[in-house]
Image (cartoon, rainbow, N blue to C red; front, side, top):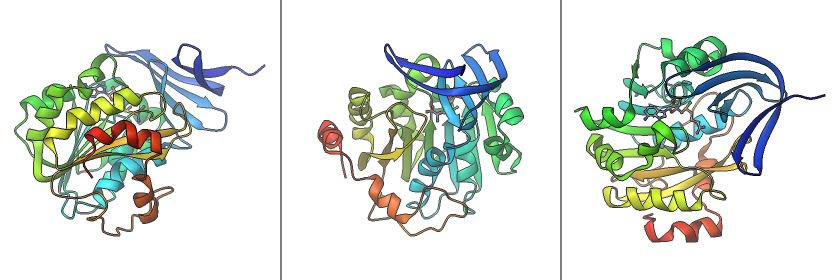
Amino acid sequence: MTEWIEENYKEGLSFRLGLKKLLFREQSPYQKVEVFESSHHGRVLLNDGAFMLSERDERIYHEMMAHVPLSVHTNPRRVLIIGGGDGGTAREVLKHTKVEKCTLVEIDQLVVDACRKYIPQTATVFDDSRMNLVIGDGVSFVRDSREVFDIILIDSTDPNGAAEPLFGEEFYTNISHRLAMDGIVIAQGESPFYEADTQARLLQIANPHFDWVTMYNFTNMTYPGGLWSFLWASRGRHPLRDMHHVKVSGCTYYNSEIHWAAFALPEAQRQNLSKWTKI
Ligand code: SAM
């Protein structure tokens, strides 16, 4: 009899993988953090029962979050990641030699510790000398910091609990103060099928602060619906016209053609977002 690792995404809608072994389970002040060995997808990280990553497909998400903006910005020296405590996005960011410092603000030390121990595929990046790991709340960080960043990547969980304000108006006002005049913001943008309202709201909130605002899509096998989105919001730099053909080593998904294709949205999503899109 197969035992399952199951994410109950909504009432009557779940995604599951065969369970081989439970490797780690602990409750932090913020969430339950679990690492399992799964069938077909290697090790998987779940926060509060929701799949964060699997070893098999994490590169897709992390490459698309990092290389799309880093192939547009010509001088990305200072990068800020909010969330992303597994290290996967930072690993991809630091493949770019122009990046001098990558500050990662993760609220939950337990996520970092669990990934360091059980998912080195993403977490070995924390030993890189350009990493500046801050354990704290990303909301307070962008409110209180006086630093300015070339690229800001919001690699957050779904908009619940501590992550809820990361999808709010005040956060985007503060993000706009932390972003350089020619900077780029990317944010985890949820499912175009199941979270159309959340996507429209996110674009509406980002719209007044940036010159170019849209979503781009990518495949993710372990997220509900299989197709997922990132918010693109930038000043000055256009996501397609300013793309230069950067060759990034060791990519499994990202390339120049995928960069272009990702911004072609399915018709229903395009119409849903059209009022707030600037592209
Ligand atoms: N790719 C993932 C996804 O969408 O499922 C996101 C992965 S990463 C593990 C998300 C991280 O955001 C979590 O570890 C969580 O602790 C962190 N997080 C949530 N709210 C936060 C906040 N307010 N400040 C900083 N980090 C936060």
